Length: 460
Image (tube, rainbow, N blue to C red; front, side, top):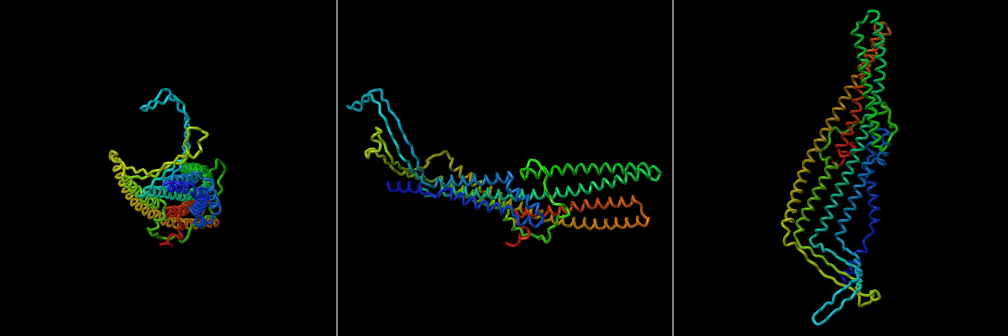
């Protein structure tokens, strides 16, 4: 027994240093987060400014920093639980002085009043023999929870980068729409001016003039709304990048390119790459381990314990051979009656396991639904853009014909202005649908679990 205690003490002091393990974990985590950023996918948009912003987001965003801290917190929880699988060693020093104020009798032996020192310097070791594997299962359970937190971090990366990119493109759209709106206002002001001239010579009615003036106020109101939306988008993007002020650099609308050859069909198996799906898988495993732990709680615990050190009544004899202290033993324990607490705990964990299975099935259905909806939105956005682009080209031809008519004197300046205005309104639809088409690819990327859509069917 003495040798067993010594071996336990040696094992407790020869554990691999935690710092070396933690350094390796930090390196692996850094590689994972770079993968979560998925720069290869974002490079398909051919926008260097967007890529630069995403890298800045990676470095500065507070939600990503908190997600990383959650990983580190739960790594420590796993380590704390793993500690229960190892021998425990403690030093419980005890120094006291007893004062006996009355005479004590033990039969014929009389002990008078006295004062006495007591010095105890023991090392106490204990080890719960995990013959049922209960502590190992608890560690596995915490490891599965850590896996859930890792998937939550990955989900945060996918959501933040996708939301940032969507708002970035919306800001570019807002810039372009404002430019068009300013031109529309300028044209409408010319229309109002020319209508006033016609009204002054009796070639236009008052209702015609008022209608054009109302249109001008409507266009100005739309401009005000666009300016407000622009400021809101800039403020939102600042928050993503952890900036308090300053403008947000962005590309010009004319440099945006639509993604081509995106797969028109995605296999439903792609949901197995989604963070929420992997979280539910890990949750089932975690609760499964908890159920097995609850069953083993009904079995006896066996603890090996021992002490080694010194015990003396005088300081000068503390380290003498006669003052050596050693004791060891085995302590089995089992709860004979606990009021049904352990059985209730076991049933609780079984209910939680059934709940986890239901959540898993529900997640599969919701993921498939989100994937299908995102694919339909992408297809519709692409069709709408194609139609608006065709309409814009047709209106552009109409405007060119009207300009030619004016050159030969068969159309007025007002006719040209009206056609130019109609062309700009059509262009606004084309701009909105182009950005919506870009954003729909981002939504589809998000639904596919942050996987590059050009590689999404490779593993299937």
